[in-house]
Amino acid sequence: MHPGSGKRETQWPADCFGRLADFLIERLSARIVFCGGQTDREVAGQAHRAMRHPSQAAMLAGRTSLGEFLDLLPHFDLFIGNDSGPAHLAGLLGVPTLAIFGGSARVSEFHPLGPRCYTLRTDLSCSSCYRQAADCPWNLQCLQKLTPDDAFAAVESVLRDVRTP
Image (cartoon, rainbow, N blue to C red; front, side, top):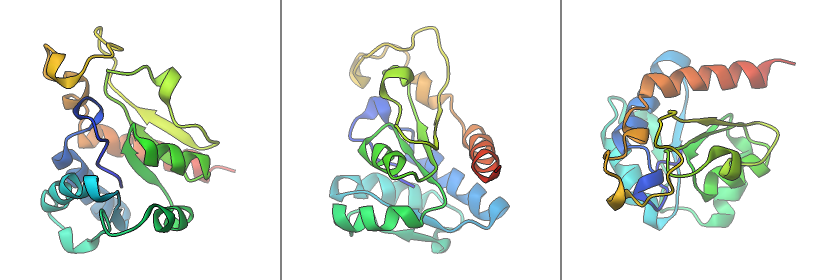
């Protein structure tokens, strides 16, 4: 799981990542790994602290190099992250990838490439706006309206799809 993005307008709230991680643990017996670079460490920590089961999640954000991250990716059953570089890397390596998009960018233009890439977003009349977070008059409802329940349903769909021969 990569809760960082580098831009507020593309970053799903950290507490949502934490609640999604709990759902994955409780409902799928998943093992969670929070990953990211040094700049993602704070948001990954927020997601980790938002969890009910933080002892069941490994915190690697800020603790691995890019090379180490690339070595880890093929071992993931699923990569979940925002519209960001790590989601694109996971997709290109063939890792099943669920990329969470806000409304600032057009999914058709910026989705991760790869054979098993999926996206989650809310369709609002203001999307795709290409606005910066500070310029959004609706307080990033495109991200706020996506719930951990929505994301869990998307995860179930992705897993069904990638496991179907």
